[in-house]
Image 1 (tube, each protein chain N blue to C red):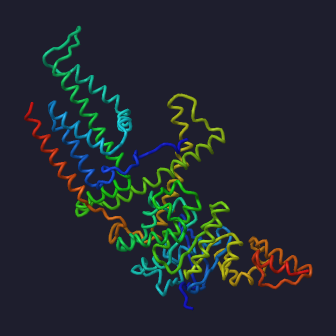
Image 2 (cartoon, rainbow over the protein chains, first blue to last red):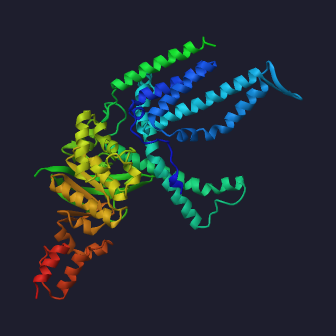
Image 3 (cartoon, rainbow over the protein chains, first blue to last red):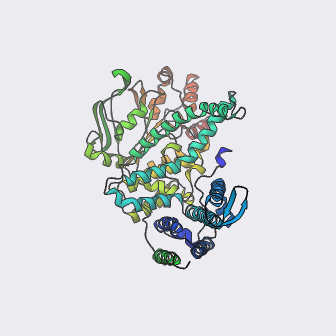
Length: 266
Length: 278
């Protein structure tokens, strides 16, 4: 049962968006976040929403899949909405006892809500359309200039690769330990929350022990295969920009210009 | 034939807490010929795995010397050449794969030694073909069976183009089917000219080698061809090692006065020989 959990929500496909270079997609996603905060009026949001809608359509990821990512932040979304709608001062729109809803409040609340939704949808599109390994490779490449300053960029990327590789292994291990403890009468279901947390100790301790054992085995195997850090290392799949990626960068700058321009519309 | 591995008077001690030392290997000397297939057998704690790790420089001898292709494992500047020419496959198939995509994992070794990308691609394809896993190259390792994972690990070693591969109990965690698959690949690699050192505690697997070295309490206690080794049945039993069924049967038949030549050790040879008897 625990094995069914899917981490890293990659949506397999072969659309244009899937095939774009991971570096481009990471930069676009980051810039999109910034742009969402540059936008300050209705026109800007229309432009951003349209742009995102086009990308989603091209990616062929079902819209429902993208909105599923919004579920965890629904509470935050409602909270910011309520906070803005009730607390922003300005021209009163509706009044009941001491509660006042202002025109500006509704305005900011709506903007903030749309901004958050676009933010989550845009960034989840990045992980939905990029293989986890391509993502780590892309991050390594993008961080490369920092390695000149002594940041261990290769090591960071290697850690992410290994983490991705061992998530299923550790989940399996957890499943095994849970079953073993249950067979000996451990109870993980009953009791209040504190009791439940305490009941997890017989899982966590052996899990840590086995994680360290796995780490030792893996380190040994990596050394046996001549691993010695990023120095002098080559890559089988070199990241190469194609024409579509350059066009992607061009569109990205066009969009940025449009967004900045939109500030002067309102 | 020249020797690829030469071990001279090897002593290895693990340092435990408070300066207490355990001697895992106690004065071992032997050499391994290029292109040979050697099995090292011993029960748990006999020092066989420690010996393997000493050979490719994962552990450094406390005393004595280990040469691989004439290079001393104590020489830091040669360590990567040693590990490249002497690959290793470990026991646990889960804990030795690095990447979440099969072909990327096979590429890991060649990437480490700085092989050109196009060359890595051909090596990976060849290695996966050699272990019959080419149709799995874009799959995730955790979705494969134990035997298949172990085949990927072997492909990872082959992609380094080694002269010699040390298998450290590669079948210990596999089911019988996976065990057969791995043994077939090992025999195939040997036939293709790779020197094989197989560490195991299955006598049936060791019977397929051309030489068996038996270790007990950190020492080599027996060294010879399978025929010679299985003859010393009583000695093997005295150090708690099992004799393969075929050898046991031979010995018992001989006791009853049936003459069986001592070259008969595998099941097929046995069947062929016994069927000729009237």
